[in-house]
Image (tube, rainbow, N blue to C red; front, side, top):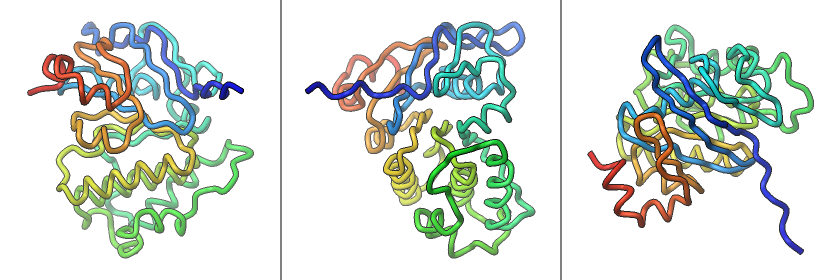
Length: 245
């Protein structure tokens, strides 16, 4: 018997976006399946972060559609998209520096769960501390006293407190020490093990290959490659054309 086709949880068709008169995305098509990790790769300025922001409604799409769990979300406000179960971890982190680690997590839970129904095994601080043991050790510390890598982990953990079905993760490994990058990879794989789909924007092919099933390569706001991460690693022509510095 043939295995059932994987369920598409997030889908963009012809997604276009601009900042003022400057168009940045040109008809982006991509899909994320339930329980899958997909890397959106490209150089700085290629359109990775804008793609995530357009999906999340932070940059209004100029054209195309975004569908999440069968519902079109292209014209929704970001807070409504979040309440449907799509989490977003921005590159800038945007934690509450005057609050403690525990308080940051509580803010995430209260903000994201009010309109959600039917979630099983909700995320709690105890569950998150099992994935992020460093956060458990500093749960009473103010976020301003944390390192950049620790703040990144806190941002991911805060997003998970909203019990998302999928997460958009923007440049998770950028600027982090190698040991923190390894911990970040473990966190992404832990999310996948929990059934959470992850779309991450990334420049680091080593990191992407460690965590992702498939990859898209974007250049000048258009998708130039789609395939498995292993095939991307083996494709010298694509890597040289679109990923090398």
